[in-house]
Image (cartoon, rainbow, N blue to C red; front, side):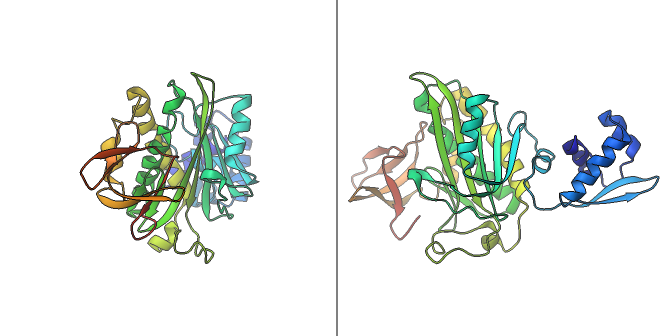
Length: 326
């Protein structure tokens, strides 16, 4: 109810009468009054004038389900949202929910994580009110070995969403880190529950550094935020909504094709390593190659000094630029 009232107020540049709200939502004036007061308590500034109705003056930078759903332009992504002030891990929460009842695009989002994690169980800093810490679930009708490609689908959607909202030049460090310049701004963690030939669900976790003003000394040369990169604060719900729109689009193309052929060109345009020398690192081994793109399965294509093309699988190795992270 509250999200529908909020959506109607956002759609109008002027006052919306209580009668119009009641009529379109088929509820009583008391229900509208309660919804308006609840929105005010959440930080929305709403002007109320007798005989004119209600007008939305300003919105807080919150990640409440009402705020996100009022901005969504999706068919199924984020149609069920669970919001938490503090949680252990949004990935863990979506797994718990999916084990009970799977809903396509179900989304968990939190202001703060206490046990946020990245690849290889690395700790992910998730401070309150500065980032987007979210996870969602999908269930592609594809064999389990294809699930890893969803990570690249997600990376493309995040990069495009951030660029649309902020205008910043976001690029992808294969397979799934989003960078601005030479610093990481987004991390993605994909986890799967599957049988031998069937995917039960895939959980995709995303951490976006949005409005941080600084980082610990050990991270400041590796990480950045949208605020540091662009100099202005960013409304986080706008990023989430725009991501949902892009993810639905690219994910449906991926599911139809069964591979990345339909989005490969767009992904490669944003590939920061493309046509650059990189180190392929596996354990103590470090081999220099030139990254030239990806294949339709998401493997990185690299060229050696003799012009021979090799395929690199995500998860087996790390990729680093010759002069640093990218």
